Image (cartoon, rainbow, N blue to C red):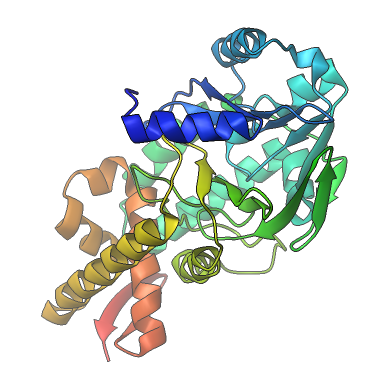
Amino acid sequence: MPETDDAAAALERARAAGFVLLRIPTPFAVGRVNCWLVETEPLTLIDTGPNSGKALDELERQLAAAGHAIEDLGLIVITHQHVDHTGLAEIVAERSGAEVAALGAAARRLANYAEDAELEDRFAGALMVRHGVPEDVVTALQSVSRSFRAWGSHVTVTRPLADGERLELGDRTWEVQHRPGHSPSDTLLWDAERRLLVAGDHLLAHISSNPLLARPLDDSPGRTRSLIDYLDSLARTRELPAELVLTGHGDPITDHVALIDARLQMTERRKEKILAIVRERPRSAHEIALEIWGNVAVTQAFLTLSEVIGHLDLLVREGAVREVTEGERSVYETT
């Protein structure tokens, strides 16, 4: 990705604060994942990249370019449960002997990756069928999802983190901030002294962070209200006096308030667009997605469904629409 002058300057500021950017390849459309090496005591790696030989080779090469090796690491921090951020954690932890820090509520999920991936696929399949995605499309998408499982791996969390906890590392203190939305386990690290925030995929400069529907971390019935959770999380992040935000993909962010305000405006516009579609006649969430994105709503049915249902959750909360169950299917209508 070509760097602008602003991005290069932001990376220089990160480097001065002890952060080295490692861009690790992934098989996903989002492209390379940002893993941040923190030159403190212990030497710390934030996120690892997916579980692949190519990703491991790149991780080793980029660590070497920074004068380090996997075996030098003393701590691995995982920002959230998605495989492009966790896949190599087991291998890196075994080779280095490093502790693995992650949100304590996600520890069981991370330790039982294969089981959790199967449960997520079943959850996503049932949700798609309920909201109007044809069953043959669901079957095809689940096959694709299963083919991506090898990019993840289980990992044992040896240092569980809690919201509000202070993590002391060498010359710095991070406040752990649980900010669910993009995933149920999104975890931020706030360095108040340096006014620096490590944000994972909670906020990205070049694309919106999709609040994906998921099973609640506590395994309670139902699904997350991911967009509602995400907007609440963004409101809390907006209040931080951050001067530099280090992200899980793309370039660092130097004006998070302006970016969050733009994201909120985009959410409001999409919510109004979806309300206008529902006013025409009752529709399933998948029908709404087809209206907005066409064939993309088929090839990326769960992603677009998460987007639509998230905005419908907002409209339901406001009393503008309601979900009506017809047998085992749901449609939305105005109130």
